[in-house]
Length: 277
Image 1 (cartoon, rainbow, N blue to C red):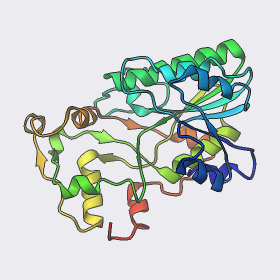
Image 2 (image 1 turned 135 degrees about the vertical axis):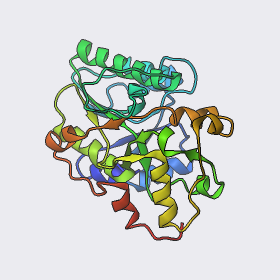
Image 3 (image 1 turned 30 degrees about the vertical axis):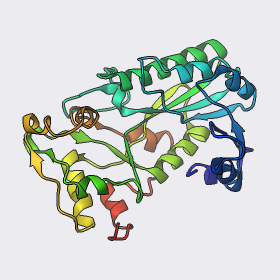
Image 4 (image 1 turned 60 degrees about the vertical axis):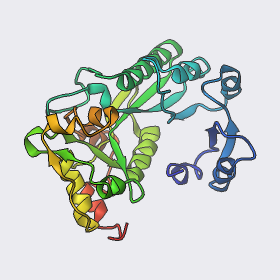
């Protein structure tokens, strides 16, 4: 929905949704200027109706939550046309834990969990499609997406603990509006078969990010615990995010895509958000 305003004046946009024609989703997509199309990437019979529909494709659908192969991307790749341009929204999780290192898009992938392995699977399948069918692939590796309505307010209110400074991990961020902008820029400016880090300029550890949000909204800061104690109190999913530390460089989006982010840092974005969550 954030991407559509960037595209509807330049393209006839077909917006794929797994919700039916009588759904609110269909209506909201149509109101935003898109042509809604029903298809479920888990069902190959519905995916076939997408064949040949467009030569420019933005693939936003996440993998299923099971296995190490992204079957949704497998189904989509089977019907992608020749010489199309596909922009795929991947994740920075494909790098695994990097010990807080700074690095660019040439770093070797090292996914540490099934969630990240599914994303690597999708990237590889799409690379194979591009090689076999003469397609152009643009991969945006995306970190934690935030916006005014996508902040850890509930986590802070529940006093979910964070890590002490010595155990904490570096995280990466992108505002949802800037991500939409980067997708648009990738459509028009990306170099063939290229990876881009869709990250902002923030250089934050996870607990410092929580502190910035808490201070802005006048909420208590999250309590901080050593890792061994925290492991006993948080879910395995949350713990997995708190076990990988990396700092992604973003020069490529600035030099090759000409990106000028609306919100270069989390602090810049918070300045424009009312202090009452």
